[in-house]
View (tube, rainbow, N blue to C red):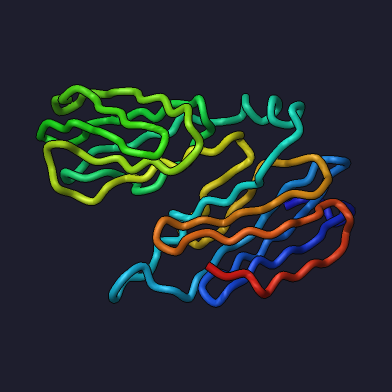
Amino acid sequence: TLPSSHRSSHVLLASASLLAAVALSSCAAWVALDGRVTTARSAGPGARPRLDEIVVWVDSLAPAAARRLASTGRAEVLRERGRGYEPRVVAIRSGSAVRIENLDRVWHQAFGVSPGGRFETAPARPGATRTVRFDSVGVVGVWCALHAKPAAIVRVLPHAAFVRADRRGRFRLPALPSGTYRVHAWHPDLGEVARTVTIGSGSTLQYTDAAF
């Protein structure tokens, strides 16, 4: 929690199916975006969407900010377990790699399909690890050629100003320079909402007309 002497503003991203409360706490010219995401929609018959599958990001960054954030990323891992993938959703910066670990007792062969192209790994024995680099921005579905299980999804973003929410829908975006940004919230089953947000002014902004 930042000291109370720091300026703060509050942004509400809302729709009939997705409500994102974003608290913006600033320190000097760089601003940390905190919030919590909730949804009233289902992910299918009788299914509630997992809030930790929501990805939040901003559209674009100044080159200096993008370079500063590029060094803060962490390696993402897809684990093959139970003849499927865990977690179902990972988010990475374009040009980064995902490590795929076979934690099963059976062989796996990962492959991915997206508008930017296709990849396929060699069959992997139990305990094997492969690394796949993603250069094209977008959504990549990842399947196993040997098992008919639900796919994992890799959300590839143009920079490192993004975050996945936790299981309670809480998130914190990396600190950004004060300014105007397009803030997005996306879920693989619910779609995407976006709003233009000016941060660092100490004002209160409310958006209640967003819709999938």
